[in-house]
Image (tube, rainbow, N blue to C red; front, side):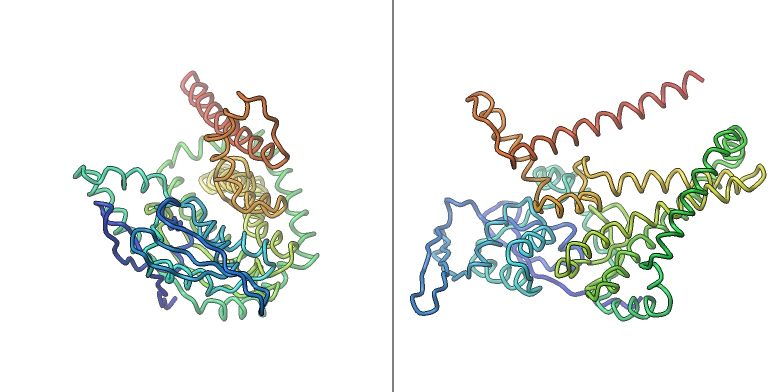
Length: 407
């Protein structure tokens, strides 16, 4: 893949906090790892300006410290209000589409540039790890760790010309993925996979014995094939955009949160499609895991004892776990299932709004005996279900470890 990295200029505070520096960030990473944060509200002032001729409202935003003034349109004001250091650029784009029904892909970079010139914007690391490191930069070990993460972030290969390739792949056969025949095939493979799982459960001693006999080879094979699956997951997301006549703006490889290698597809353009298009695009990737998991189980059930049978069974389990993680929305992870949920609810920043409400407002509301409105009930439900899911997941793993140790 030939990469041509497009960059966005961002204004970032230095370590002392009293000066700014310009940081250029690859556009793919801008969506994954950077969340704009406006300066404290007490340091700026917003005034409304009405036009009697055009009957349009604009706003003047002032930086009290530098005495810089900029003019904002109503959509720019809406985006400015989203820049609280919690919402990512992609979440802001989603909120914009839900509010205005359309989106101009240049509005956010141009607004960032305008705010940068007026020193009205800072940037907050998206990763909790990066956020913690940024607060302890005086420690030499922390600075070394942050430098290592920054070096890993440079291992990014992106292409903004991938759309043509995906169009060609779609035209030469990938369109079949979005036909009723493929849906019927997925149901058939799933049924065969369930049957294979029942047979493998009866032969589970053979499967575990084969993996125990070749542990290193089994682990390497499972990891390699799963990593290739990540590529397939993102490619199907991209092909879904082509299917609905939208554009794949970027495709590439990056280090998620600075240290997790992964591929990604910029599917922002799907927000210009219908809700059906958005839901299909979100679900298309996880269904790759369902297909592969069921297929592996079926094939493994047909094989005799050996490494290949154990490898396929282990790979199937990993695929089905990935399917669950991708689609399960209640775990504080903004995966495909989470995006389906927020689209159905019409609440694009559900995660951080829910956490913020529970952390800062819920207790006061309970003490005062003030009831919750429908939106706040959704916030509390999301946080409760997510926290309960994490506790259950940790408890399950502890139980499995104890059981394994006892046996």
